[in-house]
Image 1 (cartoon, one colour):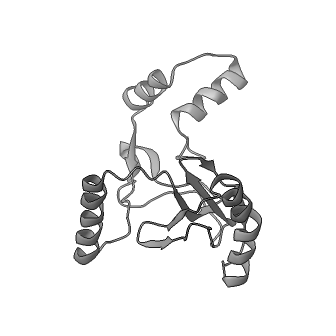
Image 2 (spheres, helix red, strand yellow):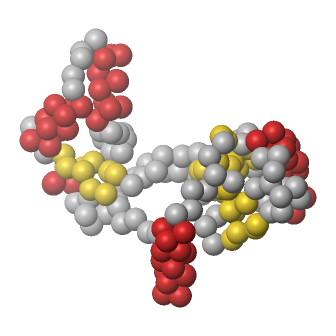
Length: 180
């Protein structure tokens, strides 16, 4: 724990078994770590993307419209991309009460710019697209390649009569019956 104060109970459970052959529950580890050893966990402040009042209203209206029209999304493909950072999350740190943790955070050093990959995929009532994993910034050229390699085949096989594409929740493209 002194070397890595972000170890979760499940990781300690695994290490206890590998090192000593002990099978111990994660709840016992958490309880003993807190009561007998004096360690307690603290989560860092989480942030989230802010949404303007206008966008909240627009999203609420969209949801109400969907409920009223009893939309089933049978011809809709939802696509999105996300960035995955390859490092520990650093959101939970375990410390002893007497360690002045609240005054000074003793975190494990991490690279300033950790390795990141981007993931793009789509889901629909009729299945999922192929997943695309790439590095760098998605520009028009990369996005067109992703669509060619992962999207066009999926739509031609699963939506021969056309589809609607929802790219994130605020951007919608309605496709004609032929899917062009």
